[in-house]
Length: 166
Ligand SMILES: [Mg+2]
Image (cartoon, rainbow, N blue to C red; front, top):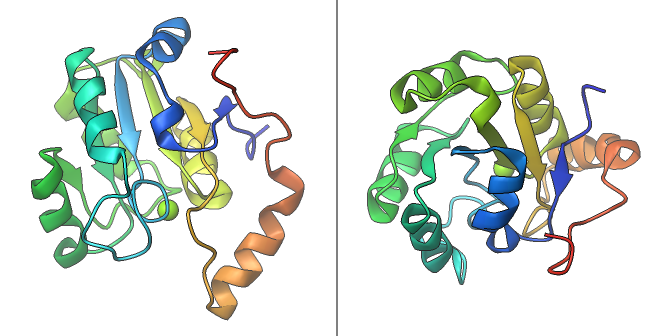
């Protein structure tokens, strides 16, 4: 189903090397806004930097793949030390494809992580890679976003991975 993620967690920080290992994942394609921090916030959310370090230590490759523009994405990527793809036009595949090429990993070993069903999750399914859904950190206030969040409701995961089930 195009709108369903492979897994769902309450926060990116709940993604563990063990979980990725059990999924056969060696590379993450990470959304930024409302996944690693709130919209347009130059600071990563609490715990995110330590989580990124734990992923790097486990040998997990990462790329930031964002639909946002270079002035927002590039300084954030530099701050985190993770390469980025800006203006990726998710759910279209081109941004993911560029990231994959730079990671030298097969699709089976890649996983998209993001907070939007119709960009991140749909994009992962179209591209043919696994996905982990995270709920948005902060609900948006614009009419367009409110509409998108309303439309997402039937597709939101019913089950979230817990610490015990990782
Ligand atoms: Mg997002």
